Length: 144
Length: 468
Image (tube, rainbow over all chains, first blue to last red; front, side):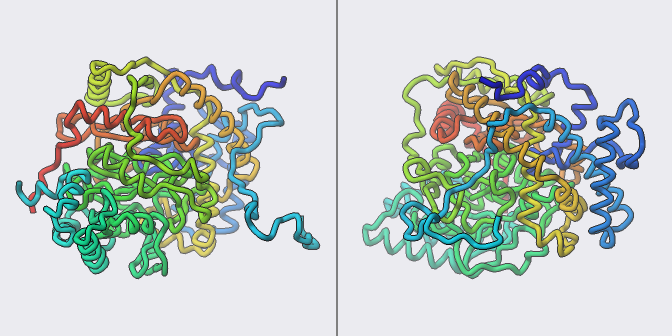
């Protein structure tokens, strides 16, 4: 039976053993507990993101590819919304995007077997007691 | 008993007096509304007072009870509801300037249910704008200004159910409805020294409530005691086909009487919930567990499973929030939010990919299994409510209130029930809390643990000095 989880990849990390840097990043959660929302996308760590092509410094959490991702996402966000932002907001947005990419490193590393389904919510429609059951409906052309 | 003493009575005692007709629901509602008018602004506690509706509902309750038609323990009991719950004829601002004039022509499911129980809505509680969904840097991130802590008005209540907590702590209502996506009931209850109950995901219908993160939003009560919180949960729980995530009939309902435990509770003391809780908080938490142990509970250390749970939760909230507020972000009206972080964070949320979102959803599936196994050994797991006491109003939450919160991540990602109750005070006189979590659907266990604790302590009876 295939392994279902990524235990080997992640379970050995001890929270108590986090580096100061890692702690600071997680502390991103600053607002988490306080704000009632998640830490990850709001992480408050470091200064503005480095330019996309810059090589990561020794203390940099993101790889060169990660920094490129930050650059590309920032470019797209600024292309789309930049006209409505001040220079300070643009800098802050770059930082926020970087901090939203950082937690993805661990998340993406987590090994998942093919059969692990997403724990999302889909309630079948219509309900069994409903008059119109889905299998009696004609399919719309051009749908997916 | 002084008038103010009555205002700090728990629901159970107010109900006994109302049932016996020793206390008039109309007088009680008037008293609280008047107090809301005079003291509410001191704490920035209310977004709107619903005095006219309160008087009408209280009069109806009084007449029904006089006729011998007593609906139950919430009949004639005043309460406040977070301003993200739709209430007909009154503004529902979601705490945010872009929605300042928003009105709905219906009541949210929770309001409907409390109406049926005979409770009397006296006001809409202030809140952090959009329940903090866009992120916020300061306590002032609200249409109504920073909510001030009744224990010290220079301190914050925590958010996002900020007004709900201030209202209960200051004796402006016996209970209030709050919501939690991540920490928004438990943190305010800890900062304000009251009881906050976060039900199992899906137990309480969110129909008519602002959505922040569809797969993580919960609605629950803030109250004086666990017993009161259980009574409120009983009234608001239940299946609702209008909420796609509602638990089905037979699972969604909650029986307040089930919040007692027939055998000694097995409590897991979480050793890695907080990195470095303040010394006085660690001491208060230890003392609380000793009380439980001394009274027959079994307490053992336990560690939370490690993994990218907080990261997954963050991705999920970011993506779902960006979807829920797509129009606000795309139109640029997000710039009208008060907080500088909230004004731009939606643009960052929108850059998270579908692949990463699905990865987070699949990680959640794994976490659910892991955390469920943990509850094979324990009825509840416990940790300090927060690693700090209430912060000052001017604290930069992004830089100065920084801590990892794996328990919050796990609990909210998996929809676990939790309750926060006071368990002490700091040297500066600010409340300290303890939280209990249980397996999904086992809300009765967290209520039982909290009730048991409150039967053996009196922290929940302490109240701030709130001189008019």
